Image 1 (cartoon, rainbow, N blue to C red):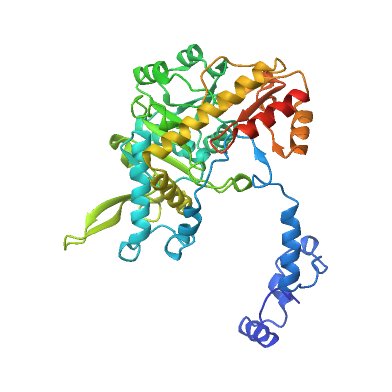
Image 2: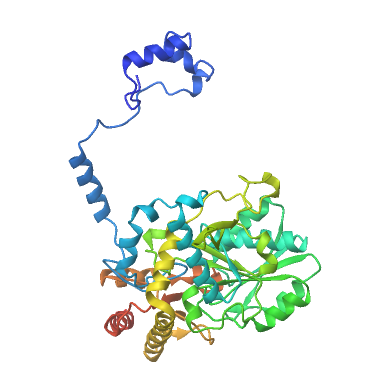
Length: 446
């Protein structure tokens, strides 16, 4: 009756006999007849491995990826160069099957890689403690908000509208059902409106979330924000692009309490949207409120270096309501890839990537503005993304770019109606002068 279930007829009869039933129909007698499917499933007959491979290959060919197109699209996921060593090392069994390493005696390889990931990320962000890891930047923002509430015993979270709209959507969904009060702070000329932030601060504000470089690519001046937040005894949560920290001041230097972000740029493919991984760094003072796992270095009693999970306050270990988080899994494999990426590039390599992103994006921006056909939208410093305005339909522009094998920019008007006909373009270290010049040429000719 159910060919997709591998039980033989003899096994089915033995099961029914054990259940004192004569047919499988009796198993479903409690399901109302009107909601039961009374026909066979509309599935084709089985195919051979060769046939399935051909079908899947043809389906895959219908997609266009960054292998086929020159990518100038950012908005949260970025086309950075990924050293080939990452793929080869992640394919090793000791990494590829990575999960929470409960038994340190058989998980030293995974534990060491997580320890190194956390250490390098702390160096990059200037913070004292890092976990491993969050699902993505959205859930990292949620966990940071929970930390802020638990630490301050307040109930309001303020988030700037310059924070990635997808992150803000995840925040709204989670915090609604946690009964938090979430308030969005308006932007002004592409950055957080500091006057609106001051006006919204009160004694119930647990934390404030800002992003720099923000969603528009602009580097925000966090100095005044930090003073406003801490004078109210609230926590400052900052979302960052980790690769921008090769040249920008670290959040630790800026006095940030919790650092979050999307780590996809650290050696993860875009993968049509994921998986990447989220990260969350904080201070020793807030360490015990942090979700996830923290790996520590120790010795085995015989003087040999070893690694263990030092903090893991999850619902498997303590009462569920006392857990720092109910996230039961993480993106360990992706974070190990990030550790390999950071170790491969080293300190100077990360700086070089940051510098190239800045120089190449500014070259593209200046060339488009020089044409006179595209106008600047913001007059602020930016990292690797910028926004220009045009009178042309952005759908038409992106379609023509696609015809020239170029993946165009993000239509800012979709999320910010006040910036209609504004296109946000991203230029990473992968882009060559020839590719940028081609982008400019095609956009000028439209």
